[in-house]
Each structure stands twice: as C-alpha cells, then as structure tokens.
Length: 231
Image (cartoon, rainbow, N blue to C red; front, top):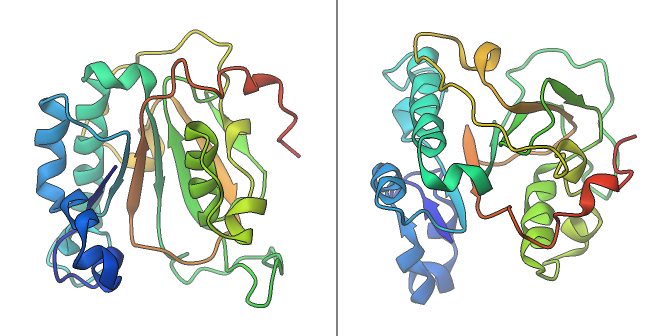
C-alpha cells in the first residue's frame, strides 16, 4: 500500500499517528509527486491513497484555480488508464466537504455522531457500471470496507464492518472497457469516462482524495455481480 501526501501538510493524517510516523509503516508514506513515477515504473501499490498538494486540492486560496485542481486529478487518472494496471484497477474520487450548498436529504443517524451532508464521489474503473448513478447510502468507511472485501481483510471497527462495500457500482460480468483518456481542457465531473456516480451520504475526510485499488481482476470479488447491494 502507499499513502501519497505532502509531509507536514495538515491533510497528512498518517503523520499524526505516532506508531506510523516513527515506525516501519512510514516508508509507505510518500510525497504526491512520487505517485505518477511509481505508476509509470510499474510500481503502483495494491492500494494507494493520493491527496493532492494544497495548491491543487480545490479549496480556495491555494494559489491555483479549481480547474487546475481538476486537471491535476485528470492527469493522475489518465496516467493510470494508459498503464498496464488499468485493466485491474478501481479509482474512487471524493471530496471532504459539500461546499456549503443546501442538502434537502437529512443525513442518516448511524451512531452517536451520525453522517454529514452528502459529498460527490466517483468510481472510475473498466469494471464500473457505465453511466450509472448509485443511490446506495455510502460513507467514507465504505471505501475501507471495499478494500477489506477485495483483499479478504477483517474490519478495523464496527463502523467499516457495517458500511456498504460499493460492489453494487461494479459489473464484473461485463467485458472490461478501455476508453479514451480525458482532456484536461474539459470539466472533470462532466467528462470522466467509465464511471459510476455515487449518491453518497458521508461524514468528513481528506480533501479531494483519490483511493486507487489494484488489482481487481481475478480477485475473490469476481463473482459479486449478482449481489443485491443496490437499494
């Protein structure tokens, strides 16, 4: 696994965990600029968490426009799509907040704290259901649950253990697609191919973060297309 986030940045959550920062796991934490070279060298980790540099995380005041942040993400995705790893990869793109816009749907109260207002999320993969809007209630722990399902790992807490695992957004019976890459002159949310859009009710996490999971092909979830996970 790999965690790509700038050192000493407020978005670098793993730096705040003592046994990670001063232990063996810190070797998995790299600057975001290292991700594309890793992909091009055929060394993309099985699971990658990529957090943009502060100027490109689409928050105001970072010295770059929102479009520049979108193009940063598109370049990352295009590089993966052009690599041999694309055929077995799933990318989850999400944001840490809802932008302050009114949401008419009350967040589910799943525990003492409950979930927060909905934020955008996209699954980009040759195995994603094309042009599909998933109305399942997901949260950020759903990404963790998806990783646990793919790799046969136990849940860390009750929260991820009971979260939806996002498999309903995939069709592993379909022929995997290899589509044209996205122009950085377009708007990311209008033009991203091979994607499922998630109507997700979530809490809060790192800004404009992407989670990349590879491999998917030949994994234990290959027969999950029949699971009735959409409601």
